[in-house]
Length: 193
Image (tube, rainbow, N blue to C red):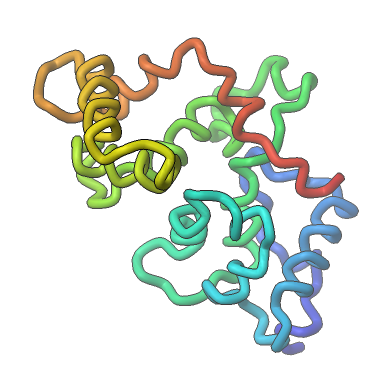
């Protein structure tokens, strides 16, 4: 069988946080196939740029980058599902007791925060520098504020989160600064509904 005849039974176990129901996976697979217009069996950056919600999102290009770790130029269906799982809303029944031996679901608060953190941490050094913060804020506000205002907002944001005074924001500092934010809901897209 070629990639055009993908058998869902051959799909590796879905990562935690990915819907395991066949109908949900089937819907995601149909979405994947619709984006794969040339029926290659994988998606490229150009294919993902067809997603309207990403096209209008100021961080759309960075989100698309997350589909292509380590410089890969293509994403297969399991990779597509794995990234989208971060945006899956947390179901009420997900909050019950989970087996501590199982990996944390991709749509957990901590994994959503890790995903957002890597959108900022471009050089992957484990810290968000002032320069990286400025780049993201510039993307998000566009021309609505002056460069001077933007630099002031950046400085204040980094200062408030930077507890150890190193001039950058670590992942731990990032999570603390977002403690009160409802990231589970703000970072949810109902892909299947």
